[in-house]
Image 1: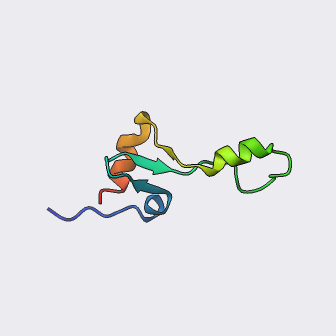
Image 2: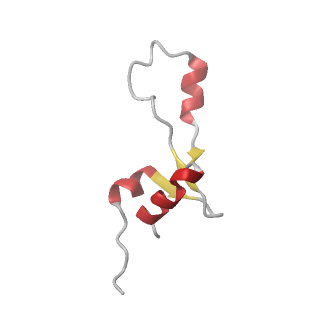
Length: 64
């Protein structure tokens, strides 16, 4: 069997945790930040986990 190739775009966006879950960054923190409250911007800074619905798709893209 050939080796699986990593999806390089996904590899830059997602990281696997030690327990096998997948971390992702949050959207809406790139521009037009003056109109967003400080609390919202601070909460967008933290990473979160990929949802269960998308977990299989993302794990296929980053097999290693």
